[in-house]
Every structure is written in structure tokens, then in C-alpha cells.
Length: 243
Ligand SMILES: Nc1ncnc2c1ncn2[C@@H]1O[C@H](COP(=O)(O)OP(=O)(O)OP(=O)(O)O)[C@@H](O)[C@H]1O
Image (cartoon, rainbow, N blue to C red; front, side, top):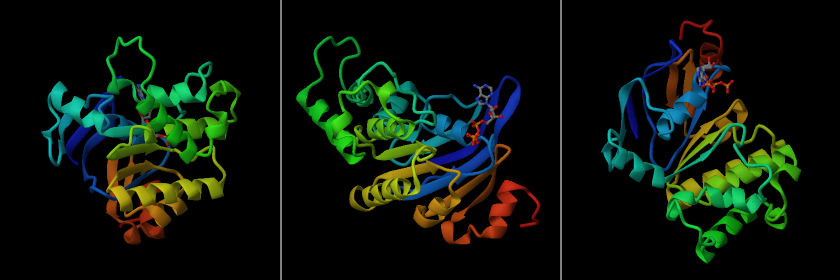
């Protein structure tokens, strides 16, 4: 996926400013930057939930994502873990995970979910260690457990492209490491592409192949993780360097 001159304006404010970047297939790309830099906005534009003010997003095999049809095809292969989870509390965890598969059946279908869909959702809950809580109301789960339901909902889609917006913010470190390992294994084994927004720079350094640093809506760093040293970090987070 390549992005050219992507700008996003909201309420008269420029949130993304002519961003140019590429997301390499089968790799983990970490997006880092200060709070308010535009990381979530970038994810929302890349997953097609917000239309940018200008710019082109180009998918390797679909071409420019300029029509509803190309976006529909693109969305089918993506999954998103949302910052803040975006779950429905009164529903059981399993139903929240199944809601991630809603575009795999007719939108007005009143039929129960297919066995295949339920098996995929249960398998995703197994991957996040919540199989035994599948029928529990989501609002009765802890913050970290709810975040894992959000992760399961994205994983159930078996996406070729996974957008993860602060997916580990409510998890303890061993669990965050475990999920990073899970993401890394899926890139190795299935060629999945992962775009990970995180404030946990040590995790980005340990697991990402590439780092994109955003500052005030502009790309301030874009390169292999090995080059994202302390000086690059200072530049992205404070701008006090002449890198
Ligand atoms: N719906 C909206 N309408 C107007 N402005 C918005 C909207 N959503 C976000 N913004 C603004 O866009 C800017 C970037 O927000 P965004 O959530 O993308 O930043 P972020 O880098 O993900 O921040 P954080 O690390 O705090 O989650 C912020 O100044 C925010 O106030």
C-alpha cells in the first residue's frame, strides 16, 4: 500500500499534511508520535473509514482506492483493532467478535450466524485466552479483557492487513509481548501485514520492521527500525534535533 500527498482537514484544522508513505506487505510497520500527531486519523484514512481531503491511496493489486468498489474489496481483507475498543457492552463477548464478520453475510440477514463464522469467532477468542468468557456480557469484563475482545474481533476476520491502534494500552507487559509475538508469527506464517500504532516504543523497536514517526500530521521519520535511534525519537517527539 502506498500513500501519496495525503491530507486530512477536520473542522478547518489540518490533521494530516501531505503524508507520503508506503506500508510493506508481510511486515510490521509501527506508527509512533506524540499525542495528537494524527496517528489514529491516519489509520482511519488507511482503513477507509474517513475520506481524506486530498491524496491517493494505492493498493498493490487493486490500484488506486478511488471508487466504492475498490474500497469494498480492500475492506474485506482488512481488520482493525480500535483505540477505545468500540464494543457493545451489553452484548456477550462472542457477539462482539461476530460483529467483526458482519460484512461476510447479507446485511439484513435474520438467520443465526453460520457454524463457520461461530468457529472463527471462538478460535479468535481462544487466541486471546478468553474462550471461557465467550458468553459473558462484555461490560462485565475487565478493561484488559475488553481490549482482548477487540483484538479477537479483528483477528476473526483473518485479515491480510491488520490495523492495530494502541491495541495493548490496557494490557500488562507480558501479555503485550505475547500479542506482539502473535502478530509477528502471523506476518511470518501467513504474510499478514500489520500496521501498529503504539506509544510503547520498546515494543515497536522489538517487533516492528519499520517505523513511521508522525509529528503534527507530517511524516517526521520513515525507515527501518534499526535506524529509529534515540536521536530520531527526540526529533519525532520534540523536534529538538536537526536530524
Ligand atoms: N472527529 C474529529 N474532528 C475534529 N478533529 C479531530 C477529530 N478526530 C481527531 N481530531 C483531531 O485530530 C488531531 C489528531 O488526532 P488523532 O486521534 O489522530 O491523534 P493521535 O496521534 O492518534 O493521538 P493519541 O496518541 O492521543 O491517540 C487531534 O488534534 C484531534 O483533536
